[in-house]
Amino acid sequence: MNYIGSKYKLIEFIKSTIYSVVGNDIQSKVFCDLFAGTGIVARSFKKEVKHIISNDIEYYSYVLNKNYIGNHLHLPGKEDFINYLNNIELKEGFIFNNYCLGGGCNRQYFSDFNGKKIDAIRLKINEFIKNKEINKNMYYFLLSSLLESADKVANTASVYGAYLKKLKKTAQKNIILESAEYIVNENEHIVYNEDSNELIKKIEGDILYLDPPYNTRQYGANYHILNTIAKYDDFEPIGKTGLRKYYKSKYCSKNTIEETFNDLIKNANFKYIFLSYNNEGLMPVNKIRTIMSKYGNYDYYEKSYLRFRADKEENRNHKANYTKEFIHILEKK
Image (tube, rainbow, N blue to C red):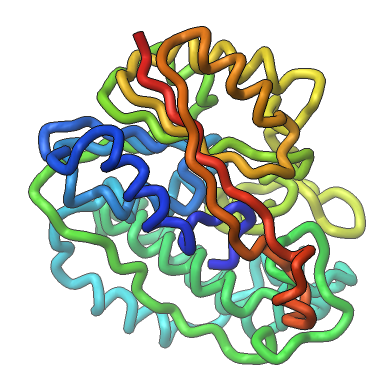
């Protein structure tokens, strides 16, 4: 998925930094990804640690991580379900009626065909779990597969804050449900859907990885369609873009971020804390250093990389398109 703040391209930088501090043998460690997003970082450590704790307040993220992190054993017959859902009869449901032109809402997040197909698949997944034809593990696998497949044909500039006036080429393609394959391993892992500052008071471990929002863009607004597909609840979409009510993070406000971050670090019961944060975030480097240094030994690494862009590829190599990623390190006393 194209995702704001995705650490996909920075995984090696993140992992090498963590290993340089903690050591190469982390098989007995508990690793927590507290602002997991699509779970890229936690996935990369899934086979290397004893236990993963994954969390995100956004429900679509919770669903993805229930599959990619929570699922760790083989699911017999999962491809049969994928094949069945790919050939399901179209239905006009909530997505078609509220986010496709044919539904009469004047919104065009998906083509009419794809909106109906998403509805048909989503309704059938609900039917499967209601009738106990699948268990929770299969439910999250199928729902994650739908979220990622729907994202590939969405008529947006990567985020869902607005839709495009005309269907772009990828949005004109008919949706194909593709398997959201996860890493199989012996260890069990746990996934939460909670406010990070509240959850941190109830968990403990060895390595805490933090990747909170950097700026004023709220993930609940930018990815509201994915939450709607994931929850598939009944509500009245608001305004031109069809927003739903969403969680507003205190990490996205200058007025609240420093106090919120301080409380998080203070309450963290982890020996090693690693914070990913770039030089364009709401908290400057010196403020992060001041807060983290209060609780132990502080250091940081940095790396320049190409920033996320939701528009075209033009001028991608221009100097202004690069930003610095910092990994702030705390060995807590």
